[in-house]
Image (cartoon, rainbow, N blue to C red):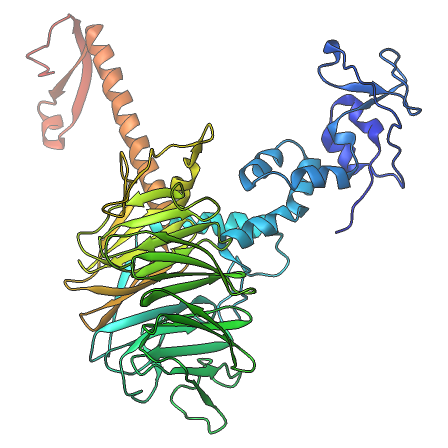
Length: 547
């Protein structure tokens, strides 16, 4: 980042904008600063170039916050959050330029959504080159509102058994589905048509993990099958085996059905009912680490150097580099079927057999870590998907629930205490809260069990026991909302005009000014001419005028 030094003399007039546009080759900062600030200066220290205090005189310079070197201001900005940076950027063009170029925006973006992945087939505002991190953040934040808008629902038919796993790959505009029919299918997200499908893999496919470089599936046969992305393949992965050069790799080692998979830039993770998570290198396919649990592993999600997992009724946090378990906590009554987490790894979110969805702060102890609890379902929660701030759950009651996780985190600490007034019942292994958090939206997905769900910036995909895959498309939600708001403004304006007209008519009646309409007689009657004239002034309705 190129930093430019500025002339502090331009700030005497109080215009920070002028101070930004005037540049000088060097900057001289006062060598000494008075320790006492006069109340009459409103917190501004007046200094001479030699560093002496000069409270009077017209030829002296004024030293304020905007006179600091840009490096110092950037260091101060690095300690602010996204909301505070947005407020600061509205002060002046100097702060706007520095806040936009601050590396803090990149950290804010990656903490919430990870690094953006460019999309070659369908460029989006989030991945266009030449955008600053502030612009990327603001655009992504605006798109998050789309999931509260209107949607179009599509249904994908083709599976002959229940759909156990669905995964979105928005950069490639693809969705991957698999289930009891042992066939992996790849669909075009916009057209809703299958573009490829694999041969029968022999057993139920319970887990799918995919990114732009690798596709992994696993199931009841305890084998992980991998495909590497092919640049010549229009749908990235040649799962049908059309190209003879495409290779399918198989990883063995588990002794029980594999229930969950995870991918990051360096490793592949697989969890199984053999009570272990195996960590595999993406390049060499070697098993480099085993994470042993105390019960069947139901779900996992990698977050940086950590892996979050659930086994039995417990949630685990692991350090992948050392292989040590950082924390384990009891989270549900019965089995904990699903787990998600923020990209920073700060929050752990679980769903379980008791139908509850709970969020924990992983930085604090097990007893005091509960941040929020939702009770959106009447049956078990089998799957969770998280796209900050939206948390989506799929349940055995056939419905999907959408929850705003950021709203829960905003009220986490009030004067250093948890606002939720949480108590933990050791006998029932559950949290007792005064009030449960609010579910923002409920989607009625299936008449039977919904097993899996995934969420993108403008789409939600779910599969279940009905052998269909449902897609909720929110891509046009913001545009539809703009048209609705424009139409609503027109209607309000017309209603206001009608009210004003009625008010004017009422006023004229109160003044006793009435109009009488008389139809012309003779020649005018044949023409249907109507004439108006003032007949009298009275405070009562006129029967002649019928007013």
